Length: 116
Image 1: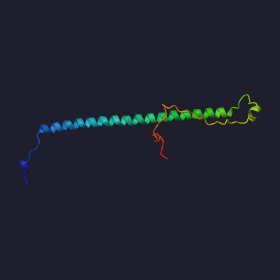
Image 2: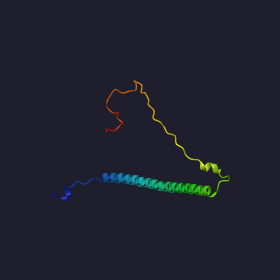
Image 3: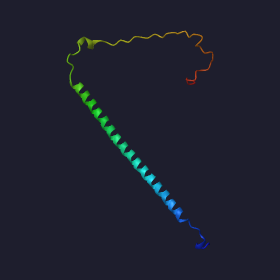
């Protein structure tokens, strides 16, 4: 074991320089903390303002829909319009000739189809 007299200690200048570096680091971390807390508060404000705008718009839409449903139409539709029946046209399949320039000579399915 070495006696305490032979252990070298850093000079006073080194201690002062380290202290100044620590104070600079402490200042930087405190500024960063303030900036990050500011961002958190800004995010909270934007969130609640956005929720308020969204809910106010939803309330307006709901009130408008209730008003539209509560007001009956001024002139009713003719009775003949309600007796119409729906008809559907039958679509026949069509055969199309593919030009030779577009036709593929390979026997493999295209890459976008799944193998059967």
